[in-house]
Image 1 (tube, each protein chain N blue to C red):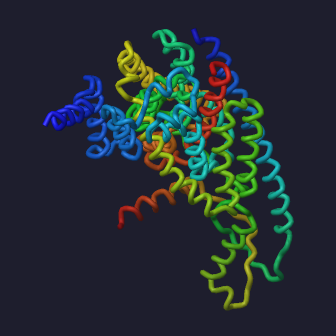
Image 2 (image 1 turned 60 degrees about the horizontal axis):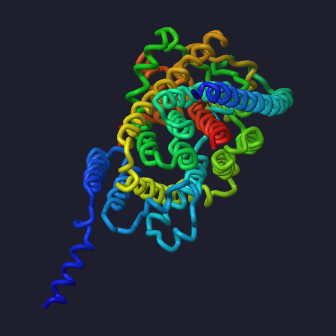
Image 3 (image 1 turned 180 degrees about the vertical axis):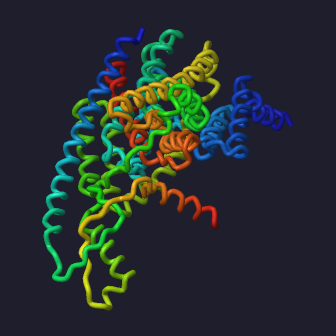
Amino acid sequence: MNGFLTSIGDLLSQSGFANGTLLNYILILISFVLMYLAIVKQYEPLLLLPIAFGMFLTNLPLGGLMHAKLWEGGHVSIQDIVNEGGLLDFLYLGVKLGIYPPLIFLGIGAMTDFGPLIANPKSLILGAAAQFGIFFTLVGARILGFTPQQAGAIGIIGGADGPTAIYTATILAPELLGAIAIAAYSYMALVPIIQPPIMKALTTKKERLVKMEQLRTVSKTEKVIFPILVTFLVVFAIPAAAPLVGMLMLGNLLKESGVAERLVKTAANELMNIITIFLGISVGATANAEKLSQPGYGFQVLGIIILGLVAFSVGTAFGVIFGKILCWVTGGKVNPLIGSAGVSAVPMAARVSQVVGAKEDPTNFLLMHAMGPNVAGVIGSAVAAGVLLSILG
Amino acid sequence: MGLDITAIGMTVVFIALIVLSLCIDIFGRLFTRKRTARNTELAVNNPNESRGIQTEPSSDNQIPEEELVAVITAAIQASLGLRDAGKRVVVKSFRRLPGSPSVWNVTGRMEQLGSKLV
């Protein structure tokens, strides 16, 4: 009889209910809210659902899926992870070792058409201008008291590029990865709400009515040379950008060459989906109570949310301002509204340019022109990330 | 306070992308020049019978000119029934009427309509 009671006692004391802290329960509740947003409101479900469930799993006490202490201190001991790690620890290796984000870029490159950019290389200048949001936010983060590395990781949210943000945050500020990732993807989804007021405020009606010349057709040769050229130039200039830019351009080359159809299909579909699942669940799992119960974390998250908004807004503003400069320089041939598409949330930001332009003149078809700066911004934010990693990493 | 990083960072990003855009521009021009050289060769050939007809659509150097000429000539021949009559047409010049919508406008509109019809 005694043995029986002792066993029940043991079972109870080892259960999650006996070992959970308050923060565990709070985070589990937050994960439920995120699941609600993903399933019912359909708010970026492909990413948010794995992230939410990862957050849920990691906060189940004693679940053993994720161990925060294995990831502390910057240096990763593979032996410890193999000995003591749980499922999500192993999946998180892909994030920590910087594998998943470049592979996502491979898929993105396989889905992207750089034609509008090749036809109008000036778009690259607009793509560069919008990256100012990154650095402006970096300064803001420093003012708020973040370390230079943390400020860099937060600033990259302004690049409006999920994989770039995750890659940079993993290296510069892994303790903030979860918050930065969720902020980055949330603001990307909010681009249609954030951008139009800024675009309208900074442009005159006359500028918004500018109709741009039809872009020239781009030959297949140019489209094949482009990824090789970009990789060569960018990686020689900023080697730290090599994983991101290299994989992006590989994906694009596979697509444009036309000789690797099967690989393109896989990279753009199956590979993207697999990596998205692993990435989502392991990034969500970093939001566990052990890590989050460090003091001041709540304020940091609040700061990240505000700074993320600043990043997107300033990036949009600078893109539009440079659009105006280009409009003036070319004598009215460039519609400034495409400048905001330099905030590289592809293709959402380009669609926003189209919609805002169409409001003034329904026959104005800016979408293709806006795709130039949009994809240029992807390259621009990868370059900016490379610069930050070189200086701060 | 991060201002130095901002200065360096923005400078590097701008220089890198400007150099990239110049290179793309140069490459683009190399290829378009090769193509317009090909076009002028083909324009010299003429069939034996000719009837000069003024037609509307445009000559851009973006679209392959020989294809455009071929398509328009074929369309005129078909609509005028010239082929059956054994006569040929040479397009002497053509010019786009200003104000006609760009190809993208039309395509975009058609896609919108098409998606709504299902």
